[in-house]
Length: 257
Picture 1 (tube, one colour):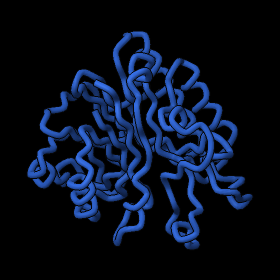
Picture 2: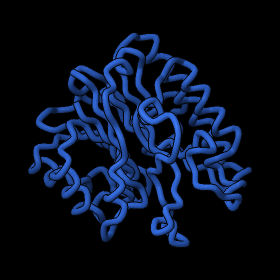
Picture 3: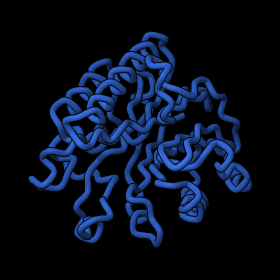
Picture 4: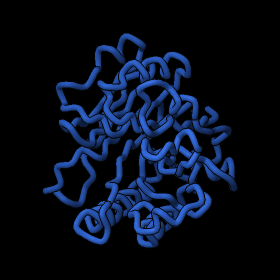
């Protein structure tokens, strides 16, 4: 079973990029983030023509998450992250697919920090950690995939001091990610490649793609029963170099059946 996560950065603007990638790679399950499309504007018909069924939570102009399944119907289990009924941002969706529970999540960026956006990021992370604990307690196979907007460690970003104040690399952000892992989740890509660059994001600014100045923001966290089934994974870097590309590249893993 091949799973992928892809911050598409506007699903309709980059629909051709998405369809070409799906045709080439044929992942079984795909988590999308940053749809930037309202609920009625999601391109479900175009995806279905390729054999992908979807559940999604749209938000006009901002955010938005989806889960796609090839030749299968994902069963929606949750369309919001619990813990704050007043939070209307479309950042979390969860579905049962192929015998596992899959979550597609888009954590808040948190910039500028300090400030309300950074506080929102950390509060959202606390809610995610609490919900993840409940999933772990249920003893079901779970994948938490998406754009975490966190650079977990120094090796996950190109050498620079220019981003020292960025919310993505703050100690509080990294500690929140570490606290989540401490529940027993496996960081799948780092399990496969313990050291070295695993960039999934290259900013549009300052030729960062051309200079390969990237960072690792997109992660798969696996519950213990799935961690033992992990056999391969990586990043489809070439997708970032295409015309009209997202600033993220798809990351993928393969689980033994």
